[in-house]
Image (tube, rainbow, N blue to C red; front, side):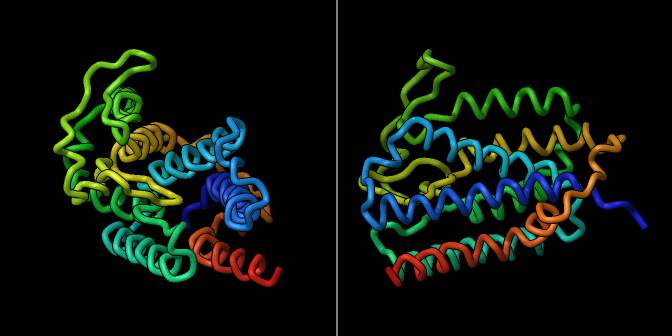
Length: 240
């Protein structure tokens, strides 16, 4: 029987705990109104980005560990739709459209479809080019392609006119989601993790097999915890 790479579960578990803490803070400061400006604090933005970067990179790394990629991609995508439906009913002004589960499911399905092509790309080159494309498209929502502070071009506004390309990264004017993770730029970060995972898992270092009990358990049940923590948070704050 193959040994489980428990440290990946532990890293996912630590990320999930951080995410739960972030969302509970969001509920308190934004939905509860304790500090409406909380989300604009630079340290809060860095915290939020650290969670999503780690989660998406780990999802890419773990692409190689799944046996039923199409089924998993569909299940995760349906869970993303469930999150949209629940938040739309419970807090319509803070509904989640194209959240991180929707991204994860779509990325998994897209990577599975592209796997024959991706297997032809050397992992080092794939990771480097994918991260470069991630950086290049990071501000697509604002209509820009840029690297650092250098704006390379402005994208045609027709891409943002209809709303049909919202999941791709081109939201229509007036679009709002409390969590928004479109394919651009985030699929390229997922691919970065996928190629890094190919390098890492060729000969996994012994450290990857280290088990950290509590974090390991949380990581193994991350999808269930994600689905339950926001309704639970809304219920708890509703009791106040």
